[in-house]
Length: 426
Image (cartoon, rainbow, N blue to C red; front, side, top):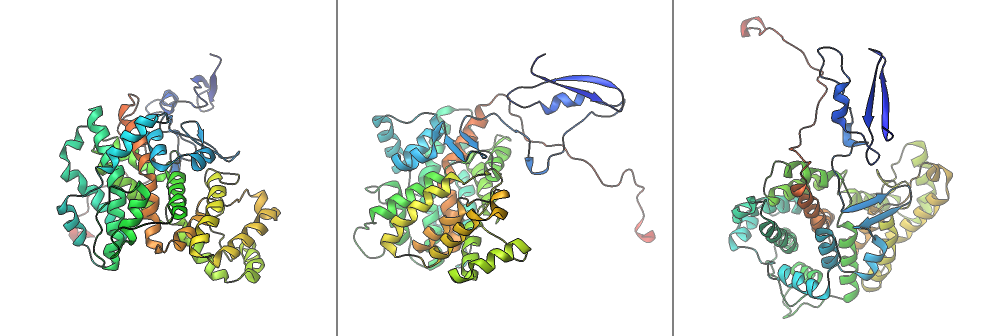
């Protein structure tokens, strides 16, 4: 066996050959390495730091080189030349659409943007100060009760219908959650507008007959959605796959992804960046802040990434998008601090040697704030952009014959075989 790993168990002196495929070994192959009466070896990998849970053709990342590709297309090209709905089609179908395919796909999504009136009443039942991400998670989960046919996941046409519904309705749900917190009336979708224009109209339209968004803001938000559309086996994608492995309907699986994204370690990093920049206050304080980071007194947010050991390619693109947005909204005073912080960090051996480069969260919060989104809406925007990626991962899972219901092993560390103690003796 040429592509194999030779393992000697020093406990027994036995040798084993384990096949290597695509740079991995099957964890199940380690079970043969066992002492008499024991279940065999397993791997211990909290957080799946070095464990592949699936084969996927959706997204490729080379963290050392700073490469991100959707279905083989570099993210830089897609952000410059494509649109969010076109990228969604690519992620879900594996190829860029033809003109007629994109037209049909856009029409299908547009005609599913409205919500059932009962769902609107469901959203109205939340407290005035409910977090919009919690509202989004609950309302997406509730969609499964409006479309019980969604549980028939083995039918390809039915899967496609639910995918279309989810991508279409996410902006509507996000906008309703936003308006609910402001106490403003909900704005229904306008099917004459593009995907992003419609979302902005549902967010910000007041008494004007027709909402007209600035094209530069539309483009910037479209680019942000593209950059967030998928990111391989991250926490929320893993949650979607894990819950989806039970063969539940896609609404429940996507709600699990939203729940994972709700956590501050996943979706809340850009808000932490804004808090950091405000605490720094002015560019004059950046050097002292950097010194504080080195001494362990301060935490540098928006730098470094679990995957990227180079400049996050998405951060480069967002940095350029900032200029277009600030042309319309005026420059966020925090931008100067951010750029000075980035400049110093990229020239300092302390950060370069640790491969701490700006990630996607470093600049995205500045754009969201310029668009007048409150911080609690940042993760909702993230979720809308990530929905096609979650659905592409879910669809791939459903059709993967190697996949089984998720059921990781554990290393039991508790008591064994104890005698029950009567209440009177405790």
